[in-house]
Length: 364
Image 1 (tube, rainbow, N blue to C red):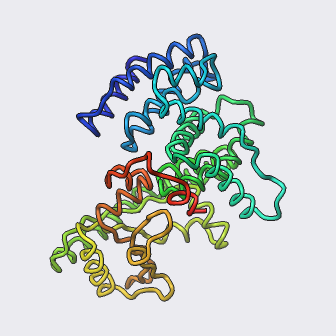
Image 2 (image 1 turned 30 degrees about the horizontal axis):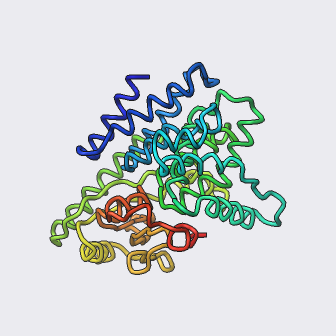
């Protein structure tokens, strides 16, 4: 436990050398005492889950108040600690965050609505309304769910199925609404693994089998694009775009295509230094290959509601194979990975001034 906590402190100091870690130390001590003797079904002491949730939050670059609340997120629900105890020890802000996470567990989600889309919209709205005064409550709950999905195999089969469906219906879309793509993809892949194990294993095996061949082709393509960008004096780096397993599965289902057809479409991301660089890079790409009609989206000029910005284009290469390209600046890429958290942390917007009508409720 101490080793994992030391890693948490190292994460925090790496992201913010001058961060106040005393509140995190205090929260760890309080969580350890409150959960003393409690064990997870995995056999780990319960506080290991608390530390894991805090590390997920720290990895997103969140403040020490949020991380401390992450360490304490289960004490009101699973121990004898009261909100009054928390407020006396940590102040109103942390007590309110932990209380908000606890209340999410009492929300009755809709199930008897005509369509999957309507059910999802109703449940997301309920979630946002319940946590309207501070979106950090949702971030803590998402981090909690993410670690629970990582350790879900220790639960009984009926709970695994229920939690996996709930994750696909509520928590993965929630991460998408907040623009945290990495969390969304991992939540989806874990749920896919548990709900459709045969399909998951088949796609994972096929991806692994084709990896070496794809990597060679992709590295050659990346080198070619980098050379053309350098010739045009566009400062940028080019990387391959990973495909997560659930995304492959969904594309196969929705488009009625085979695995080989999904994997035949190569994808790269061009990351520039400036907004102007994005459009200069686009000019280079469209000068090299023919754009596919109807496959161009400019989310830089018109960002998505979750603040996502990027240019998407699909071009047809000379060998007849499609190439999907995303073009964005370094700041846009950080927001695409970290979502709403990156926006607030890097723009120095105070959490205490965030309210539902000006933040996440507008996303539903």
